[in-house]
Image (cartoon, rainbow, N blue to C red; front, side):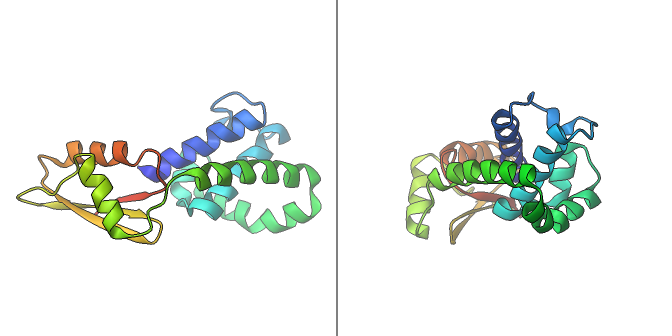
Length: 169
């Protein structure tokens, strides 16, 4: 969920910085005006967020194996292709600045306290777990199936300005 949202944000940032139409990274065109930003967005997502290749391939409507190719070719493209290098530097710097500006929790106490203040709580009859990781700390929220969606939305709302990962266990 969060990985998809982060990659969509990265794609929107990429199209905006490169002066392209929103959603154009998924076009079937092989023109370099689209191909280079598409490649760079995939590589940056893998480098910064460690986004799963399937998520990337679904969003840009390409085969998952192509993401492996993008990663493999990155160093040689960066070294020998000025247009690629300029595009990569622009997108990488902008995205890491955005990610770096988000709050990261330094200890579990502050993360739990912040979530509690926003109304996130454990259910009385837990059936599943929402794992939230921010920085090097993590918290497990035990929830029932009945309260799952409500607690998940509260977690997302509470952490909207934070750098975090969310998993359903």
